[in-house]
Length: 126
Image (cartoon, rainbow, N blue to C red; front, side):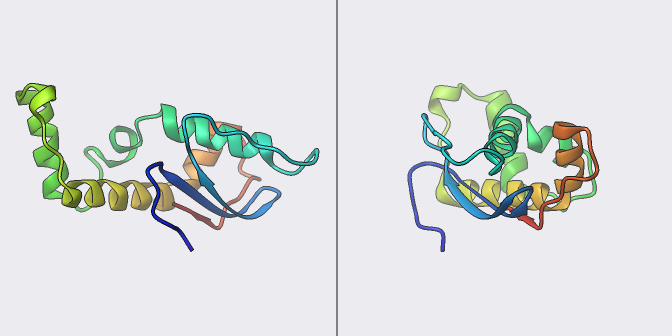
């Protein structure tokens, strides 16, 4: 069960050699394990998620239902001084839900982008 933390959590199920994992992505995250246990697969997935603008790549101008708070946030970022920007918990929850939706609905594309292979599968990701 996911616990509340101050860092984002990545959850995967049946990903490469990993049956199930819940990773707290702190500023320094270390993967430790036996050879051929899935550390490199997981590190590659984390890198992709942290370095690719998922909302721009998969959400913007696509067929996802538009989330009003995200559109409002985009407009605020464009039109206001970023230091004055206030983000409430509703917006944060909408962002998390949208990212989880994007991850789940595009997991095959994401894995193919990372590994250039259709043989690597994942059952769940959020």
